[in-house]
Image 1 (cartoon, rainbow, N blue to C red):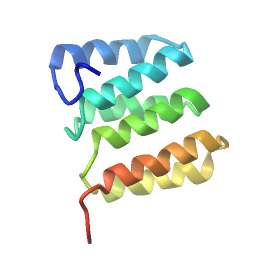
Image 2: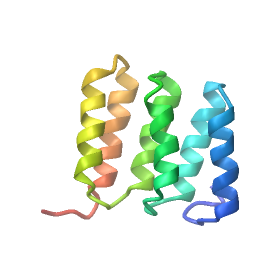
Image 3: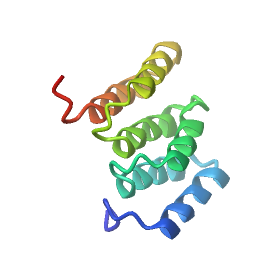
Length: 115
């Protein structure tokens, strides 16, 4: 929480390494939320790719956090291609947790888009 909306390349790199090398659901959950908060609204394509990779593994706990992390990362961007991709994945996956988290992510992506 102390790094919330404090984009620091070395800290982001450290968190991405954790996400790429760890398989524990609880660690991935915390790291996804943490990197989402640190990258709040930055649209960093490298972080987005890392979070998508975790989301598409289709594990309920880490996928839920990855979805919310994507929403935080892309907050306010109104990226319609990403919204479509997330909505399609929400329909196809078997975990309600991920589907609900994708709904939250889409709402974060659409923040301040009144049209």
